[in-house]
Amino acid sequence: MSAGDVRYEATIHAKRKDVDEDALARLGLDRVPDPKGLMRVLLTAEDLARVIELGFEVRIQHAHPVRPLDRKLVARDDAVRRSLQEQLRGLIPDNAKLDV
Image 1 (tube, rainbow, N blue to C red):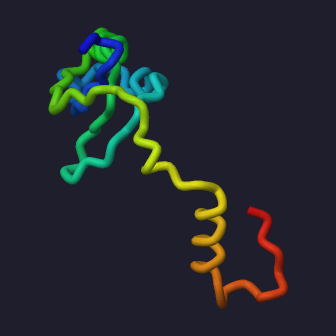
Image 2: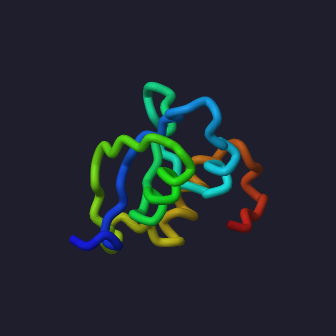
């Protein structure tokens, strides 16, 4: 597995009080919900280097291989439309046309 084929799930911690948190926000990192309220992100190797250069401590939790999405997990448009119409039944008049 090469560095380009993996994303690192990590938590980011400020080592010092003078780190630029706005610079970190400008990186546009992919945030992941964290039950403890920590900043948990998915990082490429390049992201990892940039965050460290900004003065943050990075604790890697897991390495996730990047691979194509399983086609069975991708819903077809018609199936999503049917599901949405079913969920909205009773909330929208029957004669209303949904443009989804």
